[in-house]
Image 1 (tube, rainbow, N blue to C red):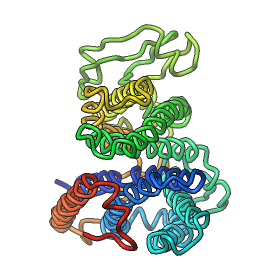
Image 2 (tube, rainbow, N blue to C red):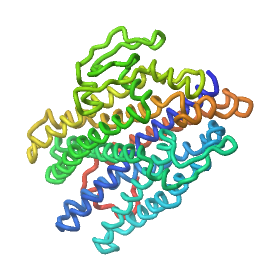
Image 3 (cartoon, helix red, strand yellow):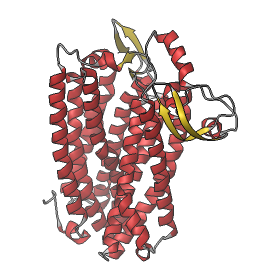
Image 4 (tube, one colour):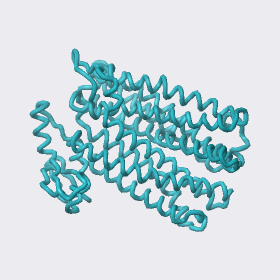
Length: 455
């Protein structure tokens, strides 16, 4: 494998693994803050026990997330030095703000929150976890602002072969970042909600602290319903945005090779032949493509072959079609799982206050614990794979962004690829073991602990 292929594989695997933890951290911070707010406003000790119980899981996930995230920074210098040279003036600004403002804020207030139980007034202690939640989501915003430039470059000029920042405001208000941030924010809420539902279901099946875990289930069901509906809504508008800003990605998501004409159908299932650039089997639903794309029963979708010719005229010879199978099926896996998550949330709403009476619902909630992680990963694959061959849309190709083989040969990239993934495997086993250990404990055990976690 070439340096480019190995560097892409390394970044793909490490980023996907890191992204297992990010949405759960974002969502759990908010829901733990909600639980402590209920404790402060209602004065019910049950909510304090809930806060400590779910707070332990949040802290474990946060710690592993930080450890896995550090590796991402090193890869820019090791494997993607040409990208860093080209993008450093722009990419470094939001990442510096994320580290110096949002992450430091988040980390500082986490420490104070953990060690100040019953030492600070209730209102002030609850404010700390809200500041943690704010810091976590601000971190996500600035990271997504950097990524959004790669999807839709704004506020820059090219000088001496480098992208130079000309408008920080344009980077911070990039239209793409608001779609991406909204999608990630509500995906995080959904992820945390389904983890809470799964753990609560496990305890309810065993009749453990039914009042406490029934209340946790209620919070999980509400958050799951809100998150599932809004992540789908934001995702719908984000997809429509791609029609104009990244038409090749959109066409790949739908496996549209030729212009459809109006009205456009929507592909339900396709067998894709990328070599011949056709779909030998394609089950379509008439009119639905236009409805989803333009909110009306008319409108066409431009095919990848047409866009390829446009890009060749604009950027020069080359293949500008992304891996279609990966993009098409990742999108459909994400959408399908999102639909199942919404159905489970509606089922929970229908059982409101009677969760323990339905074994089928509780078992389903446990099995669905992995669903948001799969949906998050496949959604991220659509965003990144669908942009290929560009690492910065229209400005820098992925093949031109990698560190030259004369500096970092393929053998060294392979060595770090294996090393990082073995390290991540160990961290993943540790994280899963700790999460299961603390998830199986009672809320009473969690409430007895003061200060740092006890392993």
